[in-house]
Length: 348
Ligand code: SAH
Image 1 (cartoon, helix red, strand yellow):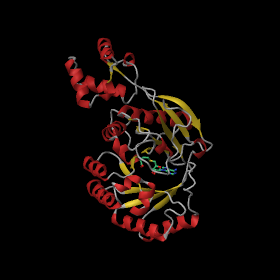
Image 2: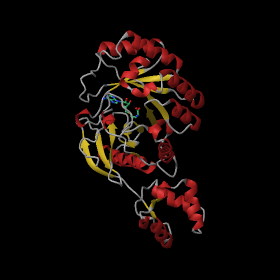
Image 3: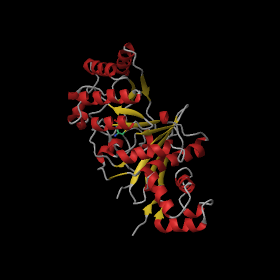
Image 4: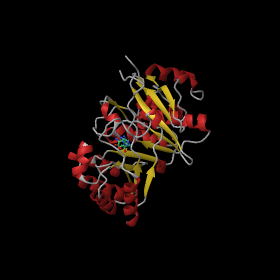
């Protein structure tokens, strides 16, 4: 029988296990720091832990790790990792370097159960949730790569890789705790963003739990009739419900929501589309990221021209909403938003 991963224990379970082994209370903290902050994968390396205890722990527990199976570098510096999990499944995570930041874009599920028509990950069935350790380890890997390839620190983390973070709720929250916690990476909460397709109930729950992160919503249209045709989740989560959930989020956390928004020709490039977004932004304290479209080979989707983008930006500026255009990164290696599809690695 395979042993349990020691990192799957909650902090309380961690302490219980060590106190049952007759250990003083500081010991749990020491072991926690080894497996989280120092990413130790072998009990024998835990030099400040008594030898006998290391052996006992090793008899009962494993420390699972992830492995970068395939590393691709884009001409713009972006790095895409094909990451193999301990059961052989593969996800992708991306390091995005810009002048001011190094961002880790990480996955929360193997595949995705949503069906956004413009996203390549939608073609992969959802196979399983990642556990908190697997999410955390992607961050550690990218942090090390930032150091190795750029000699710079990792500054930002976005849950915008494969999968829907709010459908893997508990593990995503645990990973955030470890990324921000002292026993883990100690990163600043304002640098962490969870992005959701828009599941109102889960967004409210997130607001209640008020975790150490920001929230982004992949909106793409503020009109139900349009959004339904490209994001079927809208049928069960109409804009009105999302709006209420975001207003609730702001009331609980005091943090603005970021809307992710791609503008496509003939889909959401009309005046009504702009008006609907302006209206929503007036109701929800928010800012807007206009994302470049990354083609995934579907003829229906073509990015709108600059005039339309400017019209959006101006209309938003008129009501004091900040809209920024986010340039696409890593397109040549299929590392950009919506392009993560395990093309190089078969997910057996
Ligand atoms: N499921 C979550 C996390 C994925 S984030 C969510 O939907 O937010 C991936 C982001 O890239 C989302 O904002 C998504 O809408 C966007 N995206 C998907 N396909 C894209 C494409 N082809 N070009 C640009 N952005 C895309």
